[in-house]
Length: 263
Image (cartoon, rainbow, N blue to C red; front, side, top):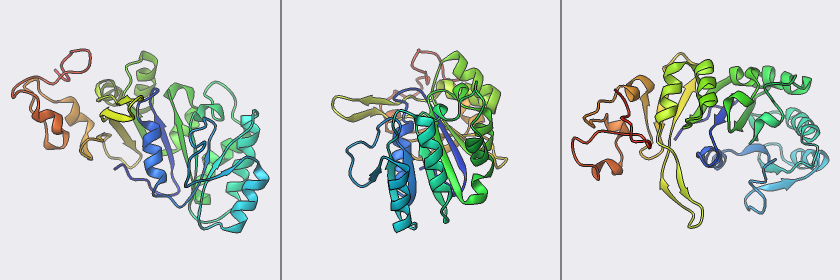
């Protein structure tokens, strides 16, 4: 699994049903101190998490026990105002902790001036032992300051031109090329089963080459290796899954459009 490092900002981006929310849910299963700003209603009716609707009730709950809390905060219509107060409450406590939000562009948009409180948090969160996980459908919608502040960015497959151009601008052409041909998530909403597990690109700020992560076998490979796969169908072991056993030997690897995965 893609591992979190405490006190770091994390950006998760991908189209609808790409797998980003599922990844966040898996992360949260192993975190003991977090507030999820649930603008999208993802946690509505779910057990195993406490629910707050006002900054005051959030503050009261965290004051009772600041060492263990799994809280979903449900904002009202004024999303920005609720987020600012929610951030202020979380900021006031110690210990490594997380603030998580889907549709992060709602509070950190690219084409508008940032709220001063949000901007300060992006610049100083790691010094306050706070990690911010923001998810969005498109990288071009989120303010560059946030993307640049993130120690890890997880990018799911997209073939939208503007999405890929933003990937190239943030992380380079190889990352954009890999994002375009990663295996997409295929989920049956009616029967609640996954028909195909996705791949994603993981970019870290530690000098290492970007990696492609495969949810099917829990393996990483460098983006350059991923892009240099040959048409004869040979794959590094880290890219092989059970689906490969069903493919005739020697058959080329193709994307969903029928094009070879690499030249």
